[in-house]
Image (cartoon, rainbow, N blue to C red):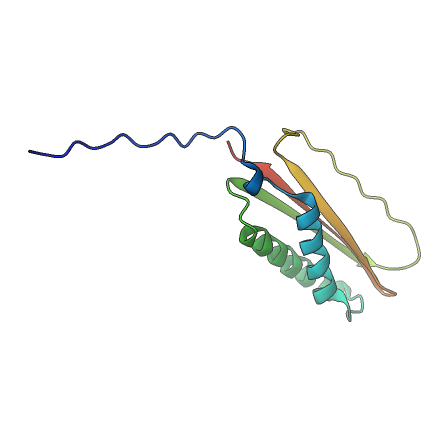
Length: 125
């Protein structure tokens, strides 16, 4: 006699549980730490800014995966520019579910460069 197979469990989740919800304060701390580690002794170089941006973006993405925000998709944006004493304004606009989705950002500045890094977490239904 063959054993009857149990039906697969429903995996449709409309909200993350609290433990796995995107936490902007935790993400901001992670971004801050990465920016300090990667840029604290750097001097601006237009040739290297592109490479640094990619490295920092990948490091932030990896750290977000380690934080185990289940069912989240991440978008990480890193901008590095030369510090000339001029002001820079950056804005973003997102259309999302404010109950589940969020973002965190941090800014690094020294005498030579500035860096703005933002990480967006979007819950995958």
